[in-house]
Image (cartoon, rainbow, N blue to C red; front, side, top):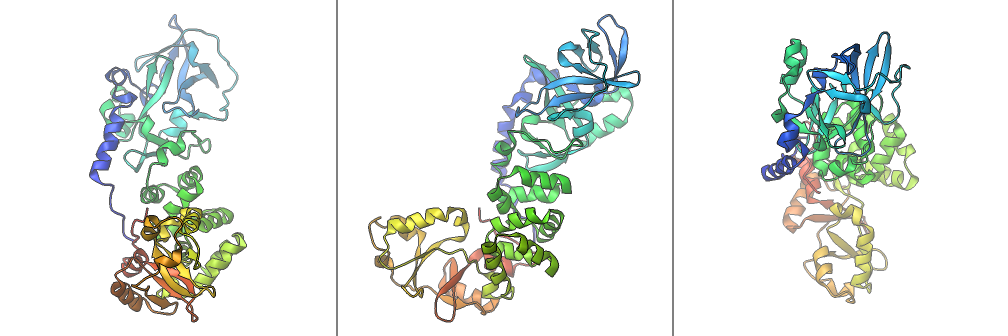
Length: 442
């Protein structure tokens, strides 16, 4: 499968412009940025100047904020790691870390649910930049003191920050805020303390198209990839899997627990799910089918019986049928019930009372017809072109070109519709370069 087309330039530009309106674009905030890499390891002193210990890490709480609040410091005091709440921190800069009070908990620090260690859990971990639609690795983090406290406001993903961290101590104090990604445009994944959940997760990811989500799934590491799938709605996750590179999808399905992989395949369009199942060996395939609801498994097993490069191997069984005498309004209701499969439905198939094909009525015709009108009134030439399931790919292509339509109807030996072949499925089958190239349906 070759790569999908990149996001149009104008769309990327608009997202970057939207980013510029966020908090990090505020010049006063940018000037006050504090590098986490620069302050970790610094001496922590009391107000009077006496040294308490050294800063080991900073604790932030993920509570759905675009800019997570920093709730405290982890300080090494002797042999212990102590937690110092932020309301006891008087100064937090690259030059000094100073406390306003000597009273803090000397019990060994224990990370609580929802808490993230910025240096230990986030720096050097993968994140998703939902504005740039890319997977990046955090080299440094930036904090800013706002009216309501210290917050995480940016992440540096550049190589220069990695070099700065590895170089002399004086280098670590040289921040470069113009190269920092605004944290409101970032989705973290796979921290050392376990999956991090943000209530804002889907706000950023939901606006990405399935092909863009597929790009992220292909770039993320195994734990982060599984976490991203868990963050997505089931329909969005299935749509993204349909757009993935065949070899990457194969690896993803093998990595997932059987029940989870089976659920995702069941949510995919039948023809796309069958394409994915063909990548697996018989044992893996049977295991996934056994874990699915019976009705889904039965449909996929039927499709798997057809050779891949035949009409039966190309078709989707997701069709909507109508009977003579039904009103246009009733058929519209049927289409609403099948809305989640809209990418695979371009027409409604009109069949007689024995289920044999009469005509196919385009969605456009149904939209422009009177709601009370009978669907039988819409049946008219040109009549649909049909093929049977055993017809080879070359003949399918020829029939599709001859019909000048967007799909072909697949019928059984008695003329009853069993599926439909969409033009993009034919293109997928024709274009092969180590995998399938999917047209963008969504």
